[in-house]
Image 1 (cartoon, rainbow, N blue to C red):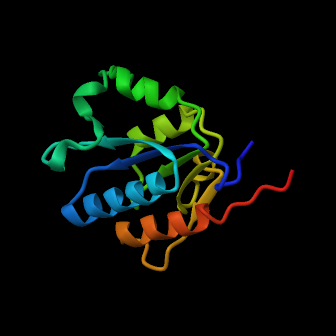
Image 2: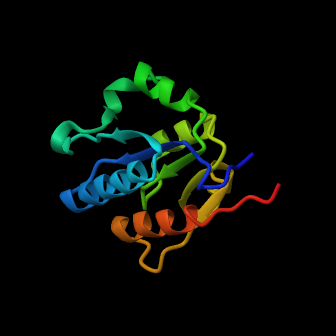
Length: 152
């Protein structure tokens, strides 16, 4: 069951690595969450040709996936098994590898961008005005998630 954001303790963040703007927006979100006393774990998918800016996040990539599509990275398994209060998917585009982790996640509430047919991966879907802007999605996810109040 979803927890009030104010009472939440563990937040997971998953995203595909991108440019410096997205990287800085992710760092800013993590800083805000930590300032509120949240324990934050971040996992980044690093596609071929992408850079791991600053080496701040746990990463995984295509070499961690077997021919049969099975994850072979212990950090990814640990992340999927973690019972986060909230798991925030910060990608504007669908990524089947991240969706696999979302599907297996033990998080109480998974939050991400609205995409037709992707409802089974999320408890809350956000539809930002500019659906191509990672920065706007991250801002909206934070805005709506921090507003969650659960009536028992």
